[in-house]
Image (cartoon, rainbow, N blue to C red; front, side, top):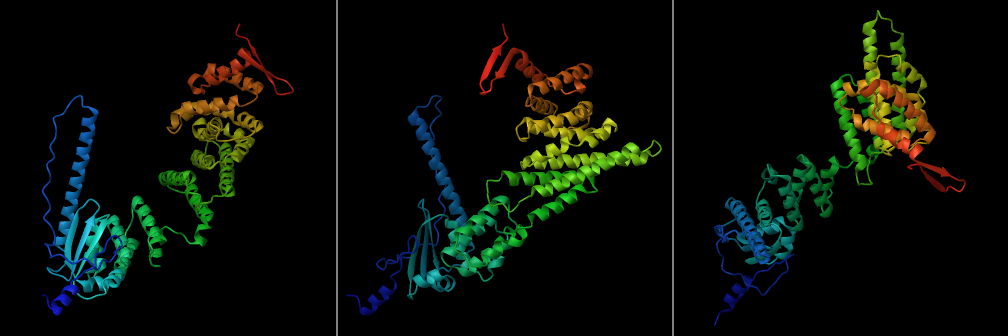
Length: 495
């Protein structure tokens, strides 16, 4: 019969079983200490069947199951190898007073001896669960990542956590942060947050950091990590001022290559903002800001054209500088028009451009090789109207073509030859569609004029033959009449 002292000693060896949230079980006794880790199993050879050129459904299902089983075993084997490497350098004792077992959902488990004093001293969770002195056996089941659990325990033995985390990747530290938070390992949480605050993130890592920090109940220091993403209210409210500064810098840049490069960057960023599914964007660009720059460019363009037309032949150097300024301001306007169209603010500019009678007259007095950039603006607007991206009244559309169509005809040949950015077919389609939105009588006037010009100029004139054919059918093949009650009658002249 066992003595009372033996029973008391045995009772002290009774451990706490912790399962899925550390549920205590006073009735489970610790088993004899097995080796700290089991040797990684050799890769299992899965027999393969000879390939069958015409497999049955059962054979295909069986092969698929075999592949999935093989993949699962290989994944488990790789996990065992990684865990073995972590344990090989772990500062765990040969014999401890806590037998800790960590088990994954797929059945893989690893056991190690650790010190109760370390667990209790570092983790408020363990301090609550392991209050009784003596030996304990702890098992954590259904873990998402056994390797991260083991590395979190290793962290608990480290004096310099910051040094330990150096060189790790963001995804690994996020895993350590999750486990440290779950077991209330405060020093580990702070070390992970300091790491995340200091290192750069990729775009994918940025999204994971935000997701993890929003899910975990973390101290106020977590806000420091997100300061690189979250603007102060006073900063976000000045987004229009920031954009105004950027636009001013680009439009007045002295280096032509850098100016073009930054135009592409800002356009892409603004387009991403426009297409973003988020309704909480801090970027709010006012229409007034964009049109302020449009008016400035127009004023500068008119001034440069006026000076260029008045320069005599003896001042060719000055004339060359002015021609460069004309091309520059026209390019700036094209960029601003693209932004307006992308942000669905371009309707007002169509009217503004259609009313530039003085500019159109000055345009005709400049050599084509310098002025063709101006006609690209007209082409932009016609393409946008033809696609339905600009909705303006018919009198504005007709005014646009009345003011600028002849100039577009004159410059089209140079536009094709001098600029790779011009899509000939796109411009022709946009121009034709714009013409077809006008009343039939105006279509006839414009298209008959185009017909004569095209016969004389050929490829140097836009080919809007498709629009011409549509107008012809509307006029002579099928005619529609509208009575006072808006009822349509069709007259078909195909006989």
